[in-house]
Amino acid sequence: MKKLHEDRASAIFEKRSTNNDDEMVEVEAAVKAAMSVLSRKGDNVEAARSAAQDAFAAVRKQRDFPVQLDEFGRDLNLEKRKKMKVMAEARQRRRSKAFDSKKSASMDIDDHKVEGESSTDESDSESQAYQSQRDLVLQAADEIFSDASEEYSQLSLVKTRMEEWKREYSSSYNDAYISLSLPLIFSPYVRLELLRWDPLHKGLDFQDMKWY
Image (cartoon, rainbow, N blue to C red; front, side, top):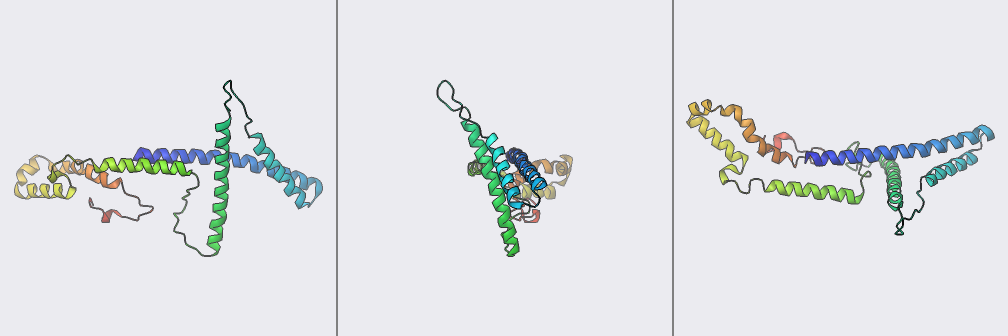
């Protein structure tokens, strides 16, 4: 589960970084063109705006991979164009979301979003793939103690057994250093419950968990 979260975060970070770099190149070209017009034509805002739009479009066109066919008639740049289109759409979604967020804030609408969280960096297929993998991990976790005896299938039962041992046979309990071994004994049960822990969305604190 830890690796699943790390891979997802790494992929989102890489995509966001690439998108930001691409967007910065477009913006810098547009600003440079607008400033050039303003320096030559004074306060001609319309001309500056038009120049900025033309520069913006020119940069995008330069990045549009042309059709390049191999000996079998397959377009070698098709996947690259699709990727560029997806990235452009992601940037547009972020702009739209930022606009909607400002609009909602001005209307005092609470949409219960987590500060700093964004779902626009993932496509629907990527989000579904993550959710599918997460479900598989949790399904596997549910089977961990399927072949264990009933008395070891739950943390509460193991805890009760240890308490009885300490109460009734304290000498052997101490000789076996059980108090030092308990963290290792309880660890699998704790880790299994923490697999489903989602503090950003479910608001479940340690005090409300069984292992605590």
